[in-house]
Length: 227
Image 1 (cartoon, helix red, strand yellow):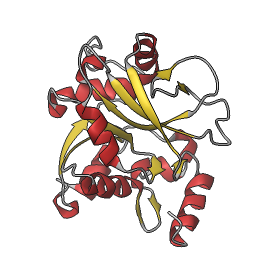
Image 2 (cartoon, rainbow, N blue to C red; image 1 turned 60 degrees about the vertical axis):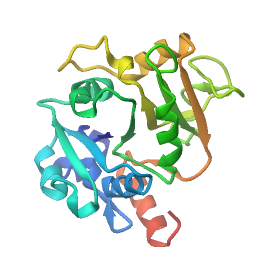
Image 3 (cartoon, rainbow, N blue to C red; image 1 turned 135 degrees about the vertical axis):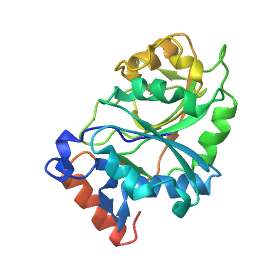
C-alpha cells in the first residue's frame, strides 16, 4: 500500500493544485519512484489511498498497467491519518500481512527485505516490521530505539527515525473503527510495549520530502545521478 492522502500543507503552494505524491523529482513523480521499486521487488498488486486532489492521482496513474502493476484505489472523503487510511483499505489488502510506504518520502531501500519480513508476521506474534533511518537534521530526536536483536522499542537511546516504510499484520488495526481518523504511532508503541515490533536500520538514501526546499534538493541530486 502507498499512503497518498495527505494534504501537504508544508508543501504549499505546490500542493494547492497537485497532490504531493505527484510532485516530481529527477524527472518523475515521487510516487512513481515507489511503484517502480515495488514492482522490482515483485509487488504487482498495489493499493493507494487518496483524499486531497485524489482524482488527479487516479487520472495520472489509472489502473497501473502502464507501470506494470495493478492499482486498487482507496478514496477517503477526508484524510483518515496513517492508521485510519490503512484500516479503511483493509478489505482491498486482504487477510495477509502487507507492506506500506509513505507516498511523500524518497528511499532507495530494497523492498525485497520488507516483503520477506511481512511473511514472518503473525496475529499472535510480531505485528510489524519497520525500516528505521538515521535522524535527519529536521528530526534530530528520532522516534524509536532498535536493539541488537532487531526489536524496536518506544523508549530508550539511541533513537532512530521511522522511515515511513514498514510491513504490518492486519491484526494491528483490528480494533480501529472504519472511517475514523487514527494515527499509526500509538498503535506501534502499544505493540512495541508488547514486544511485537521488529525492524532494521537502512543506511542508504532516504529523505522526507516535506518542504519545497527538500524537494528541490532531491531533484538536483537525482538529476546528477546521485539517487
